[in-house]
Amino acid sequence: MAVPDDANTEFRESTPPMSVYDAISLRRDVRAEFSGERISEDVLQRILTAGHHAPSVGNTQPWDFVVVQDRGTLDTFAEHVAGCRRAFADSLPPERRETFDPIKIEGIQESGTGIVVTYDPSRGGANILGRHTVDDTGVFSAVLAIQNIWLSAVAEGIGVGWVSFYDEAFLTDLVRVPSPVRPIAWLCVGPVSRFQETPDLVRFGWRDGRPLSAAVHREHF
Image 1 (tube, one colour):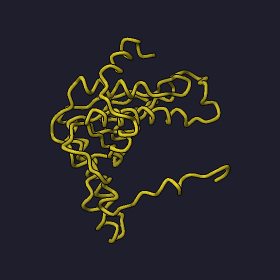
Image 2 (cartoon, rainbow, N blue to C red):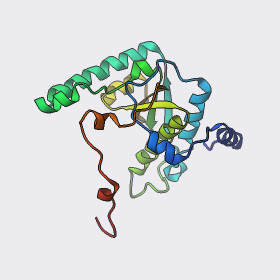
Image 3 (cartoon, rainbow, N blue to C red):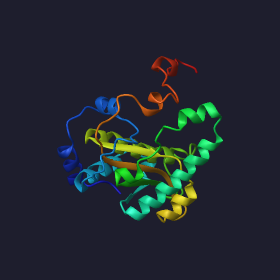
Image 4 (tube, rainbow, N blue to C red):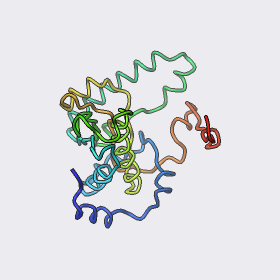
């Protein structure tokens, strides 16, 4: 469904003044910097509105946002993620494990709020304009909603951490996602003490970024 005009107006008028370029530059995958405070409901609604303003194939808006703040659920998911982290660490060769060990991979409990973003492949029916030849455009649409949430959160001074160490079936059961809907992200969301100047994976020596010149091609790959 479309967002009402009054919601659009409220969204524009309440958004803090920060350029999209500043938000992109400041954005970090936050892990250890959550302050322990819970995000206020008005700010949460603004960033969810930003997510809901994302473009989507065939205007299907195939996302839903499950807001998780129950301490028991947060603790259960954090324990599951810790087990997945240990399994990954055990799979690494010694030199890579030494690099990985000090890297914090989630802030589930510290953030106090999780947003589970889901993707519904059935939304819009059988004939979806724009998905006929590239089915993945549905998932891409939900990921664009995640990007909107992330950048709007930065503009609000709110940190976001994308947790990817989990078993999808476990998360599906945990937040009761009905088939054929699937969870595609758990986002830790909350106030932060600061944003790191250098991304964690670069700071800890896991992997450096590459320059734009290495990613841009002209006319062919």
